[in-house]
Image 1 (cartoon, each protein chain N blue to C red):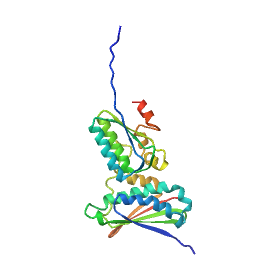
Image 2 (spheres, chains in turn green, red):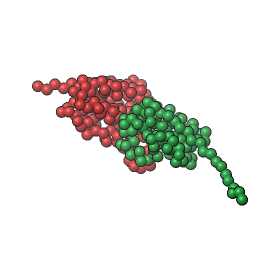
Image 3 (cartoon, one colour):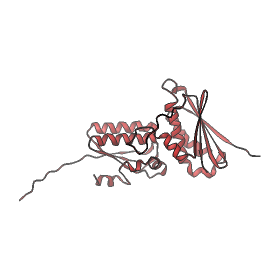
Image 4 (tube, chains in turn green, purple):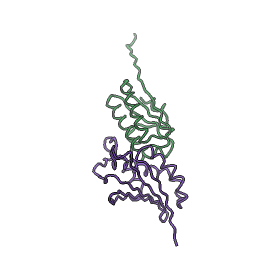
Length: 112
Length: 138
């Protein structure tokens, strides 16, 4: 007896952010996230492992992206910054408890 | 007799100019007697950056911003770092603070972050200027 099977695939895109994610660059990130969602990619990973500075504008771009992705049935997850100056803003605002975060993109992908 | 040394930077009121804050702090902390604080420059940069961006966003409008500037001065006082911001924009209105822990608010965490990092945050309107003073504990 063969059981009916079905297969499906999901698309996950990763956006690497190295250097600064500040008020200037947050605009670019928002645009990339919006473009991904318009293309139907609603599972996004933003990799901050090489970021050296994140401010509240960068955080806001991530939060808006997460809200939009979740609203479309997906999620935006974050690879944690290794640099303490980039990680600080997440701890101060407690957004490290709002985003699903991990040390590598592979960890985040494996739990989707 | 005590001598206090200050350092001052004048920045254009735009986001790009805010990127000068970190290198300037790194360069000047030792010069003003703040060598003991050098390891915390990232912490200071975040708070100063957040307040400066807040001033750029709220003290000026699209007409006034292109020619506006912001002065930031630093000095050490009994080991503490004292940072003074002076701008000639609109008076500060504190009616739009975020509710922390609520559904992610899209902007507005800047001053909250400043308050988390600084020992004190003071604002004073000295017409025609706004003067903010942050103190970071040694």
